[in-house]
Amino acid sequence: MQTQELETLVASVVRQILAEQRRDPDEAPPHSRAPQSEYRPLPGLDRLAFPERVEHLTQATPARIGIGRAGLRYPTATYLTLRGDHAFAKDAVVSEPTPAFLASLGAIELRTQAQDLETFLLYPDHGRVLDAASLARLRNEGTRGVDVQIILADGLSAWAAEINKGLLPELQRALSAANFSHGKPIWVNRARIAVADQIGVEMDAKATLICLGERPGLGTGDSLSIYLAWGPKIAQDNAEKNCVSNIRPRGFSVQDAAAQAIDILGKAREIGAGGLAIGRIPTRTW
Image 1 (cartoon, rainbow, N blue to C red):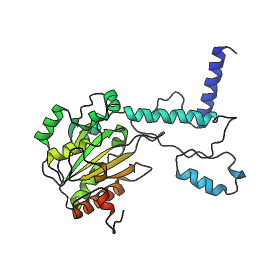
Image 2 (cartoon, helix red, strand yellow; image 1 turned 135 degrees about the horizontal axis):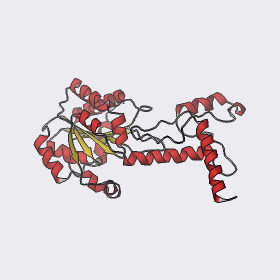
Image 3 (cartoon, rainbow, N blue to C red; image 1 turned 60 degrees about the horizontal axis):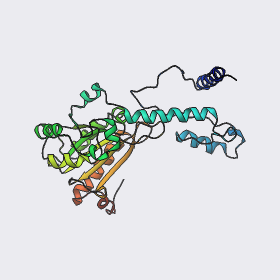
Image 4 (cartoon, rainbow, N blue to C red; image 1 turned 180 degrees about the vertical axis):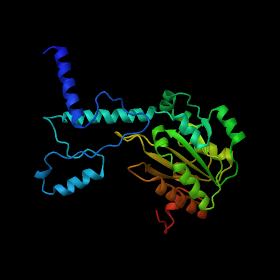
């Protein structure tokens, strides 16, 4: 078989599989939102001893369950969706926030010393410190002495921040209801978690709350995490911080995430410490 004939055959197989999945093979993947894995019925489900249990499991998770095999390999459809989901994860890492989204936040826009994506990925420490211009702007425009400084960031998926944009108003409402003062929110581009340490110290905040994109999984570049620190300090140990993760449309809702964050902050305010210290409170409810 000639190379051209082989390429034509492979292309026809790919198009057939995409058609079965009701996807347009010529359609470019979306870059404005992270995709959601769809429920895929299992072949041979009727031959299982307890098919209803397996079907329930496949509907409860986007994980690949019972995919079967073609000889010693994945079936072609599975292989193609794996490649597609891997591409989505890589796209999430390189995603950028849209100007409209940033404008909607009403936040002070800052950036770290990681001036490009390659530096951000290869040298994590550059994403933990603000650049000189941003530090000057923070000192001029930031709100000092608040109870909780809210920080938003891209992390490893700007998609996640934009898809879960409802988290900011939920946090602001919940903080106010719990009598926590909070000033103007801050957006940080190319940010790692520890940039909140510097911001908290500079703003003399009692606590910091940074929301940023999690490391994407296969086809799941839409998951956000909240990291909370009471009594922020430079290079604060992670044992003194708390995390609320898997905030995404098919995971933890922004309403539940905000409620859990407030619960953690309330306990930290009560004992004057966060992180592992909160785990020693016997009446915790989260």
